[in-house]
Length: 230
Image (tube, rainbow, N blue to C red; front, side, top):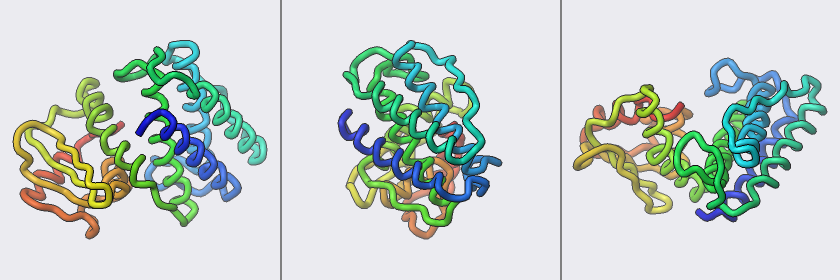
């Protein structure tokens, strides 16, 4: 995906998430600890402003003020954070920015914010009982990001061990594939790009019947079940 594609999907995901905020903000969000939908909205809006500051001020220590409590005000605040971020990210993807992992560019944030928003949009819709699909192309980018950014960062930060062997993932709908770990893969997993992404982010188990395993399934599930993402 290129810069324009990331921004296109980011706008769509923002709109879909915002629509969720017309619902019950007190509902729990299953895969986000003890957060409610209100707290998820505050997280996503606050990190919109954090990422905007990472681009405009080249720093990673920005802290957003608390979001409004009243529902209509919260919605307005969230939309404003989206507008702010989209304006900041509508820039040369090669321009310098503070990031928490290479590359240190605006393009990093175009990709990261698109992928974070689509997962949390799914979270919000799932909390309300109607999770819509994730498009295959950004879902595949999300799988790639886990292996080229998130998992290596987890290792650097001491949250996970370097992989001792390899597992291969294959997206049945796009034909894309990814290998994580050294050497010849001991196992292979096939599913749609969406399901692979949701599995890697802990939204569904790798034992789900929609996943097709080959090779050493136990070793494969052990590796993919490690702390690959924050």
